[in-house]
Amino acid sequence: MSRGNYDHLFKILIIGESGVGKTAIMQRFCENTFEPVYISTVGVDFKPKVIKVGNKTVKMQLWDTAGQDRFRNITASYYRGTQGVLIVYDVTDRASFDKVSSWFTEVRDRTENDPPVIILVGNKTDLMDHAAVKQEAVEQLARQLGGVQTFTCSAKDGSGIDEVFNALTQAIISKVGCAPGKKEDPSVVQLGGKGGSQPAQKSEGGCC
Image 1: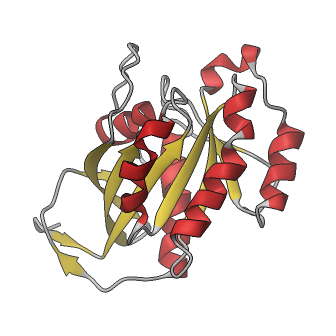
Image 2: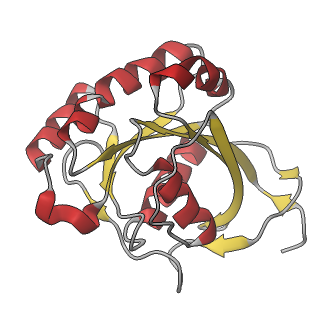
């Protein structure tokens, strides 16, 4: 692929309560690394990523937002022009899951004229022995939110990360479609290929 060529350019927001692993998910996906020391995001962080989905080359602009209430006014402005949103919760923290509905409502309220694709992501499956969120609750919530897709993953061991972003990207392509562009070209990764993340654990409830 020639440098600077891609078929689609998508802006992706990663939101959710503080400490659920939003930064770790972005870091695992973009750099295939994991930082065990938790450092809270201040405001918004950004990373670009180019991937292959089928025969399409997609440039993703990933925005990792702070989960603390004091940063809500800052992060709210980043909803504009967003094509996809990951709402992340911690599978070991029921309180973070209970906040998913309010995050979903915030997305809808701030993107009323052009709603993005939304996917729910349960992170930290490497700690499933301490799981506090039952699958039945996830399935019920997915139905209540209109049949959104739900996935689980682990930013620590990489399982499920690629499938989350693959599903999100394919859903956006199906929903909006974009004209080809020519911009800066970060390193390219083939989703579903060798290396990087492992297969995801996809929730059986909700829309697939």
